[in-house]
Amino acid sequence: MRRCILSVAIFCLWLSFTLANTDDWSVAKSRHFIVHYKNAPGDFIEQLIEKSEYYYDKIADDLGFRRYDFWLWDNRAKIYLHDDAKAYQAATNQPGWSSGCAIMKEKVIHTFPYAKGFFETTLPHEMGHIIFREFVGFDNQAVPAWLDEGVASYQENIIYSMAHKLIAEAIAADKFIKLENLAKINPQLIKDDVSALLFYAEAVSIIDYLVKEFGKDNFILFCQNLRDKKDLERAISYVYPFRNIQELDRAWQEYLSE
Image (cartoon, rainbow, N blue to C red; front, side, top):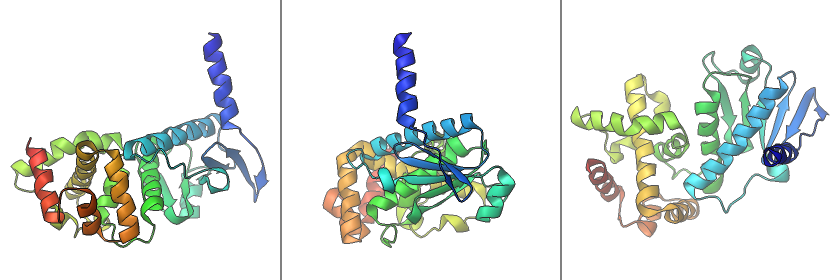
């Protein structure tokens, strides 16, 4: 019992809620995040910080980035917690179905209390984008959409758990998308849900293949080469036993068939 109470006390101290008033926003700070809010419930703010810190650690672990502690002190990510959906939409110009959005270069995430699907999908997805892009370069044109979205979606339990089944069905129906063609797709222009799900499932699957088959250290090295060389195939061939995208594609499909 004493151990439980001590753990709670340490956790509350670690959150180090520091309240301030800046342009009508109150502020709550944790190790990697600064949450700006106005009238949000206190228990939701605690939940938001707890979930955000959890995903920060999980994403760093999943991708092998644990040794790179990006978001400290003045470099912490900012979360703007608007009072409700209406205030969020007015501030961000997002559609009614949106539960949250991110400004990647500024490391800013916007949402509102109890937004549907935010903790399960939007928060880990957007954080995955930010952490990955901060590592390889926000303006790095060598990063294809499948890689960017694959890393971000790798953090979502829902799409990750569905990926294998969706891909198996696509292969059986002769609708599987080869990597070379996947690289030509802009996911923002996909019009139907089935095609969108397949794109994200395949993107997640490639990341899963690279991390599980060749390890997190090699994935870090791949990202470093992608950042430094700004050339996808050179980054792949430097780290992995593939000379080009076609060889990676064949090996990935053999992995899927097993």
